[in-house]
Length: 64
Image (cartoon, rainbow, N blue to C red; front, side):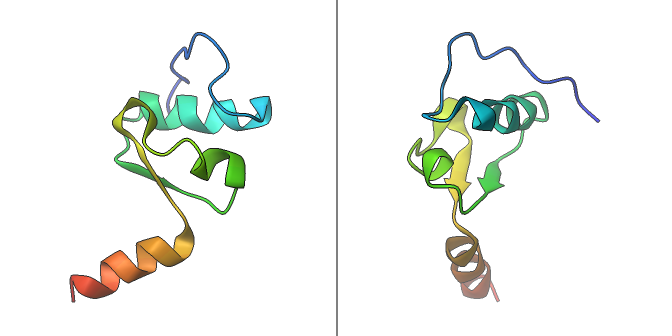
């Protein structure tokens, strides 16, 4: 469990997505996996990569 980090202003086009970003930031996550287009459009906010599930699976397959 983490306490969401303050983001300041709204970061995503959809304000409902900001809590996911705030929790990932607080947890020092490397990535968020999501199909949400508003999150994916952010690219790599705060150094947290946002990947579609297929992109994650492709990356994992390369490591095998």
